[in-house]
Image (cartoon, rainbow, N blue to C red; front, side):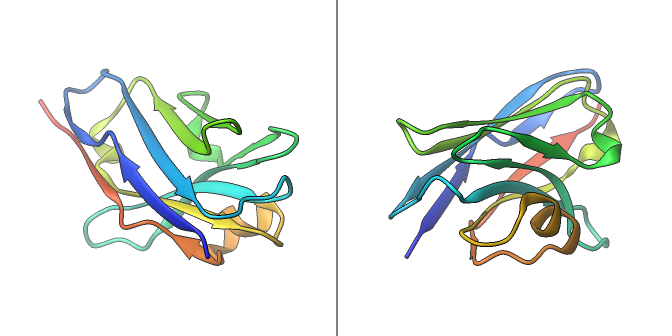
Length: 126
């Protein structure tokens, strides 16, 4: 069983930055896809980015546009999402997810993942 706990959310002005963290506990082998999702008020959950725990290869959805960077620290079992140039449209609850079998494109695009965190809220407003 894998448990995920997100942190790092908060309020920030447009153009600002935040770094989200996700602490993973349990057995995470080197072929996991670790991913970030978000759900804005009144909208469906959408994938943001994913990364393989072994290779570190990332996968990003199009709207990231180079503003977000996903990373994973194997030694600490920590997943990160560095978010720069934040926009009001980035306001959402951000969730961490982990899947031992599915590829990152499948996880991020379909939203299917075995494990989920509880989320951390990001608010971008002036």
